[in-house]
Length: 53
Image 1 (cartoon, rainbow, N blue to C red):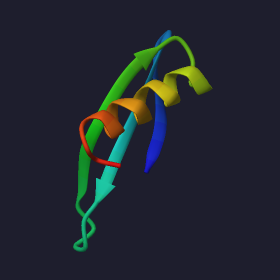
Image 2: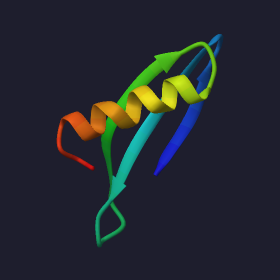
Image 3: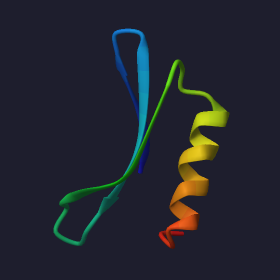
């Protein structure tokens, strides 16, 4: 699951894995000004480079 969370003037996009018991496991986090495609692409590329995708 990928979702954006806004804190004041900052946006954090987080990737969460969910196991069979429903536990959420944080996989990646990137910070930016907005929840845009560049930020999400950075997050997904990081996941792929670390072998999560």
